[in-house]
View: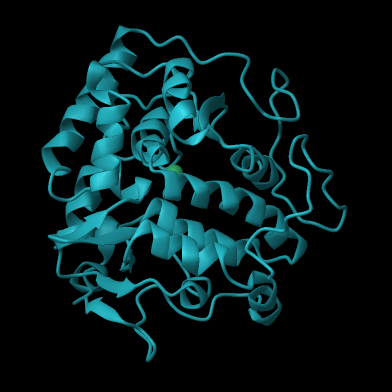
Length: 312
Ligand SMILES: [Fe+2]
């Protein structure tokens, strides 16, 4: 059976990138090597730690009852409330016995193929820098708060941790088929903005939702956005917005369901059939959708973030 990831590739060293595969032209800082790893995590000062603590406290006001159980458990298991920006070495020492993952420091953005390679080795690359008071409420580049608070607790869940590992291997395969955009949509609607159906309601497991106070409420409770059960073929054909709240969220039944839908299927066939650009707008509802909630799209219709519309 063909799977999401091509299995015969050796990922112990960074694989050679075929010349015909496009990668974004990012300029590598002189002090990092081909793996883009920082030699050490930044030494944070008291103000950095205070920013972390304030961001943490703000999220904990909105996340209980809205964040996935697996995420809240992960926060506790890693003792992320102990105060100050966490040390990656300590986090890795705690994570490794649970699911084999570690957390490694990188400059803010790294090339896709290097990112995938780290995931395929169960290393999560986390941004080294932390936002300032001026960018406290909204920052487009992922900082250490988004990466560590948002992503790392989920890596304590064994099934989710395996999904991320498979995703890394799948990234290389998608590049060979020139289908990175489609695989990027899958990441967006699961790892960053995914929702899960739990016994007492919908909860968020996506890091983009969990690391911001507005979207945590909007994604789970607002009338505006659509909530649709995840269908991988459909999601990989769906456009997404990167600088505003999402018009649509996709819901999984469980992490086993996510794993089954992605890893245990014939992606090579899907890649061959996918059109080069997205088919569906990010607010669209289509015939095959299994709808949890039909959004009013009021927030979007009022003009979204730039207009100052209320996220309702
Ligand atoms: Fe992220």
